[in-house]
Amino acid sequence: MKTITPTLLETKNKLHTTGSWLVLVKFVYSGSVLWRLTNNVEDIVYGGNTYSAHALALSPVRETIRGDLPKQALVVYDPELSMVGTAHSNKGLSGGEVEVRYVFATGPTSWTDTGLVQYFTILSSTWDDRESALTFTIGVTSPLVKRFPRDRYIATICRHKFRGGFCRYSGGTLTANTIAFYHVDGGQDYIRLAPYAAYTDFGDGQHVQVSGSRYNNGEYVIDRVVYDTPTGYTRFYLHDDFELVNENSAHTRTITVEAVCDHSLTVCRANGNDAQYGGHPGVSEGLYG
Image (cartoon, rainbow, N blue to C red; front, top):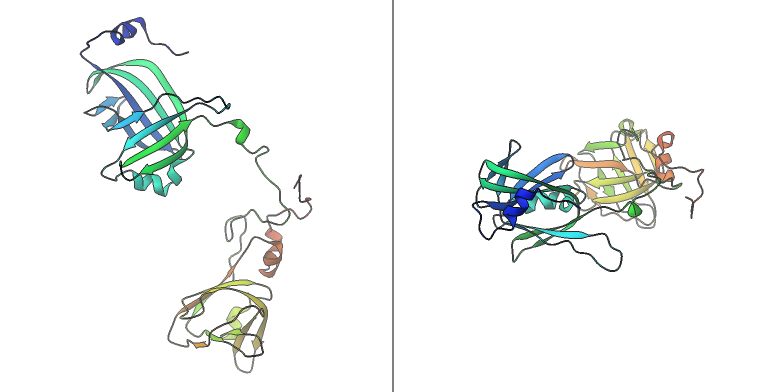
């Protein structure tokens, strides 16, 4: 149990004092300090850092009979909307850290540290547009909700980021204004490219993403690639369940066709990158997978 010194305890129990009992709150997310705030009408300098005067409220500790870990609500009012954008772009600051320190201040730079400091984890957050308030639910994380062991080995899903440092795939990208799309009645639709020699890193079974087209943006699966030497064209024939809209974009639109990955071994092999596959085909699926 945390206590304060007898002198401060005597001051706290007085009916009238010349100072204020303040809360200093520090928000830390991804190792960086976002805000230092205090529930005062003027800024407070503590430990060489300025805690900005701000409207905030800290609720009592909430406990339940269901065995939940104790939680508190920390409400930070943001009428100028200077903080909600930061919280929104950083997943509500979930997983961030909050330091709550209590001091007795008699001026902006004159204070007495009570020695009471608490550390919390941000469990969740909400925004109340009517009250212009950010409410952070703070508490401690439970080791019972953490994955152990840390890594999970799955046979059918690659854990690497596509085109990242562990994947190391860098091919399968082309941008040109000589790309056309053909819908073939009774046959396979295809994407036509020229010249054929530039696209030899594309192959059967690949998934490709088309962008920049007028009518045919989207993801497709290549059934087979045909390099037509006499005409100088390359044709990406698509699986039967894909239909295109006739579009001859030669010299009018810049279109990008790029290989993508669904993190399966099949597509990794189609990309010719299965040596870097980040799944574990030898591991059984199910309870122990």
